[in-house]
Length: 123
Image (cartoon, rainbow, N blue to C red; front, side, top):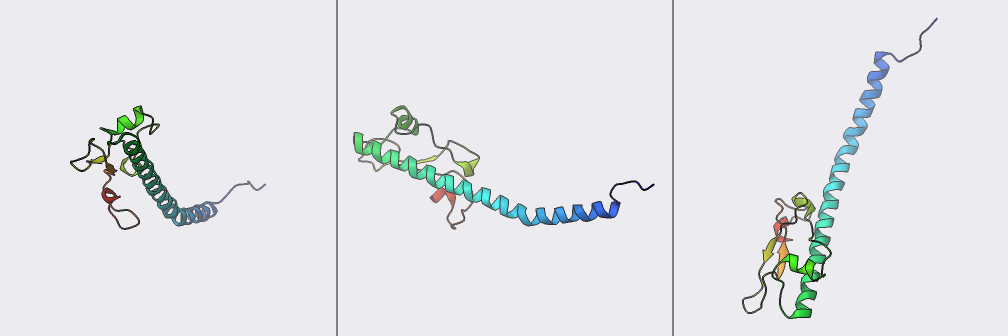
């Protein structure tokens, strides 16, 4: 009477096929994760900059901090930087000396360069 089961050779063939498929798909998966982080970063920067501009248009001055945008309901919450490990810390750019306020723009604190060739700190 023969026992049913797989031989060692059959198991090794199946495992080698699985390893080959994973080695083909894993780089594409990780690349898509990085691409989506960059997309979220660009969108968060766009929304925050738009809120700063609306604040300036309404009050004639720039906000003192990003928290002021949240408390005055220009933003629901502080934007996150997914490239810099989901940080809510940003490099804040001051307005010209003749304008009140402290935040005229914000930049990412993430290190490295994006897919577009520009450093994240220049976005």
